[in-house]
Structures are given as C-alpha cells and as structure tokens.
Amino acid sequence: MNMGERTYYVSHFIDELYQNGLEHVVVSPGSRSTPLAMTFAEHPSIKEWVHFDERSSAFLR
Image 1 (cartoon, one colour):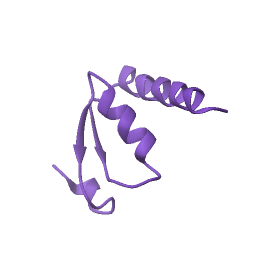
Image 2 (cartoon, rainbow, N blue to C red):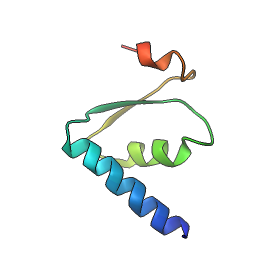
Image 3 (cartoon, rainbow, N blue to C red):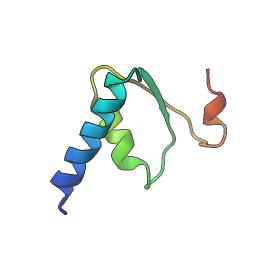
Image 4 (cartoon, rainbow, N blue to C red):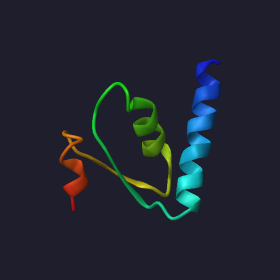
C-alpha cells in the first residue's frame, strides 16, 4: 500500500465522520496522529483545535 492509498482511505473516513455530524475535532501533536491531523486540517467543513496534551484535550471547551 503506497502513501496515496493511505491518504485516500483516511480522507474518506474523515468525510464519513463529517457526513454523520462531526463539526469539530481536537488533535494533539504526535507522529502517530499526523495523517489524521493533516487530513482534518485540509477538510473545509471541520474546525480543528490543537491541544498539546492528549490526556487533557477531552476537557477542552
């Protein structure tokens, strides 16, 4: 599987989340979340919020 195929699947996954009501997402910097974070940032209808600590990001308002 090349990087284009991975990006394809991630973008479709995020689009499905949007179609099911997702409007905001909180991302925390890290190498494991980079593909999701970058694809969320490119989506025109989802507002992304960056928080430095994933453990406390659930409480971000």
